[in-house]
Amino acid sequence: MEQQLPAGRRPRLVSSLGLGQRCCEVTLDQERGLLAWRHPRRGGENYFVPTSEIIAVEETELNKKQRNTGKWQKLAKPHAFTVYYVKKARNHRWWCRDVTFWCGDENLCNQWTQALKELLEMQKCRPKQLLVYINPYGGKRQGKKIYEQKVAPLFSLASISTDVVITEHANHAKDNLFEVNINKYDGVVCVGGDGMFSEVMHGLIGRMQKDSGIDQNNPKAPLVQCNIRIGIIPAGSTDCVCYSTVGISDPVTSALHIIVGDSQPLDVSSVHHNNTFLKYSVSLLGYGFYGDILKDSEKKRWMGPMRYDYSGFKTFLSHHYYEGTISFQPAKHTLGSPRDKDSCRTGCYICKESEQQLAEQQKKCGLKHEEDEEEWKVIKGKFLAINAVNMSCACPRSPKGLSPAAHLADGSADLILVRKCSRFDFLRHLVRNTNQDDQFDFSFVDVYRVKSFQFTSKLSEDNGSNVTDIGKKRFGQFCRDHPACCCNIADSTWNCDGETLDSSAIEVRVHCQLMKLFARGIEENCKDEAAYSHSSIEHLL
Ligand SMILES: CCCCCCCCCCCCC/C=C/[C@@H](O)[C@H](COP(=O)(O)O)NC(=O)CCCCC
Ligand SMILES: Nc1ncnc2c1ncn2[C@@H]1O[C@H](COP(=O)(O)OP(=O)(O)O)[C@@H](O)[C@H]1O
Ligand SMILES: [Ca+2]
Picture 1 (cartoon, protein in one colour):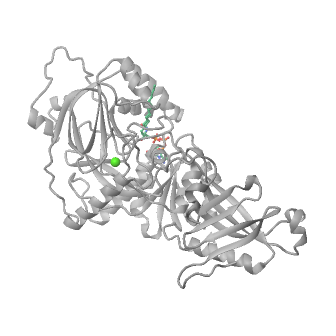
Picture 2 (spheres, rainbow, N blue to C red):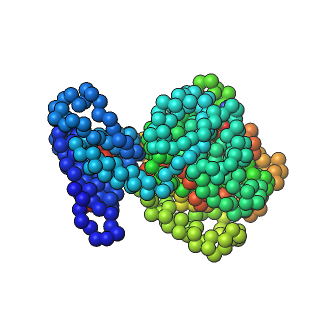
Picture 3 (cartoon, helix red, strand yellow):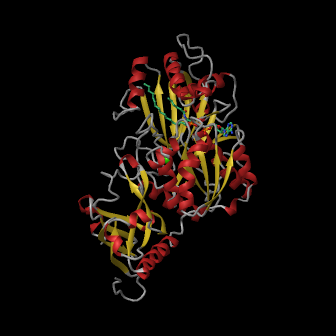
């Protein structure tokens, strides 16, 4: 049955279709893009699926066994179609579910499949052609198996074509991205951990700057945004970027985020030393504790993800602290604060506000660099950890992350300074990174929302490093010849998204929304397995 609507409006299909052994009323609201039915069993549960979350629609041949039971026996040749759709479960997990509707009238069946397929055709943000890089050695070395068994069948169901490259060495993906005909693809997918994601991101951002004639070595260069989206299939050791952007580390959920073609902009920090580009970072830039863990864990790669627990324990026991100066520019443009109770969620208004500011700034200055004379704050001291995070850094080890209120795309990073304290106090802080308690509520922990910062270790100052050091220029030397000082004599290393940096003296700048992921962001938690609750969607029908 088709409802009469004013010209130009897409009709609403309402039919009584077979589902299993019974009939149910199925509605397709083409104007609003919503498929709905009430399950004839399961207590008459209502199902509501936005067409943006339908993966595929297929004509279905009902098999003999199905036909020989119940009602269908009476139909000479029932016609059927199957709808594959996203079903949302607890903890942000997405499944691919299917439902098969049937009827005796071939025309009606065709009308339904046609209408659904047309609605799918209208989803223009969905990728059709993807370039996939698989790191076969990431995490528990399951990348290839995960892709072949869990992801490839979903891509094929969604009619996505892929070119797959299994990497043979580190930087294979990055180098390849500088050569490949990138315009052929709607996106790039990486199967691996944060290190693999970082490689692909460096390839894409680097390629973009090269093609636009931007010198990455200039720390003040206005970088060109990268519009080719990256999808992450988690198969690494930490999978923080994936977890912090979709809310779970699960290959099927991530594959579905890619298929439905959502976009999540991401802030990217550039890291320089003496006018030389070192790296980009999207998750953690950590000096001290997380740098030392990474350095130690690299020698234990054979242990897989467990290497971080082993090195984490060792590093905690060593209790090293490092002396240095941090100078930073507070992020005054953004509305939030690291102590906010709310986290960055799908459609976040704070990130939207930053997006608008960015658009206005680009309209005003184009690609010209705007001189930034905003104040610098300088902090010198002895630190157990200096962590700068562009996102919450939530991961299975730390479900709310190192900075739970950090935003994915607000043009700022949260700078967390953990000063020298007792082992017991440091442990209390670390434990709060893993539970619901406030990890910043300690006298020895400070957190700032910043748009740029610089760090120089005392050691590199003493050795006369010539990195631009605003702290040194304005405040002169500090802690020199301090007789009671028992700082670690060696420098720590920066952990930049799981890669070590060669220099301890660095300059960091956050680039608002420099790139985009295939992700929806983290949705407010769904209460139960039902795709949508009845009350939230009822008003649409
Ligand atoms: C009582 C013990 C408490 C331990 C505290 C645990 C808190 C863990 C926070 C982890 C934040 C992770 C930030 C992301 C870092 C990744 O970029 C990086 C590389 O990941 P991958 O390429 O997938 O290997 N991972 C790490 O540096 C590991 C840090 C883990 C520390 C235990
Ligand atoms: N075929 C390969 N052999 C060795 N190293 C690789 C290969 N492919 C990618 N890499 C490198 O491995 C590093 C870690 O990969 P990642 O997938 O993040 O695993 P993990 O999460 O276990 O660290 C990345 O920095 C990447 O550059
Ligand atoms: Ca941010």
